[in-house]
Length: 253
Image: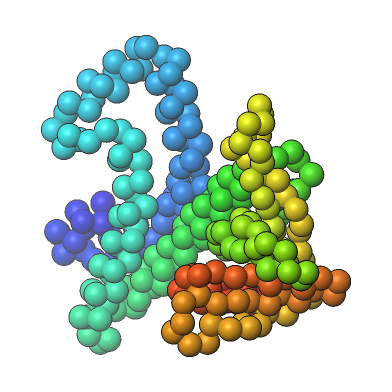
């Protein structure tokens, strides 16, 4: 509709109509995952729908793509609209009769774009939390908690306090906690591919220090101090230890 108005030179009415329907993009983003699941279910259960979908995908408008590939297109177009309207505003004189309407449209599109990005970010975070929850053995450690954000994960070596061997552990960093895990026994019938939670450390009382690794040497050592525990974590990879240090210091602020 917007392009139709632009072709006719009716920028003002086109922008007004466009802005009135912008909210639909946010609702579309909210329901996109459910739409994907519904499509999968119908393809699995409904033979006539499968035939109909396959027939429709032969149409030239699909350009050889599947229906699943087209579902994200409206949100991609919203991003394109935002840049198009910004460019249009920058090249429009403030004295133009359409300038204020164009400025209002840019503001509206930017707000909806932020809303959509927030929806996508929250969904991706929920998927990460769910993935980690499924990786952990049992249900004692509750990863799926409202307000929690996934940050990063990786293998690090734990330096013991009493001269024992280094222990390789998988760590998960979230916005409020730091989880230490170890692999379950590879011959375990149910949990051979899972991780056993060893400890959950709250970040609000954590102090992070880089013990060594300030130079471009091989690897480094981090110290994580909690009220009743100090963790010494090591990596032989300099970039890895630097990334962990940045992530941890940002998370505990």
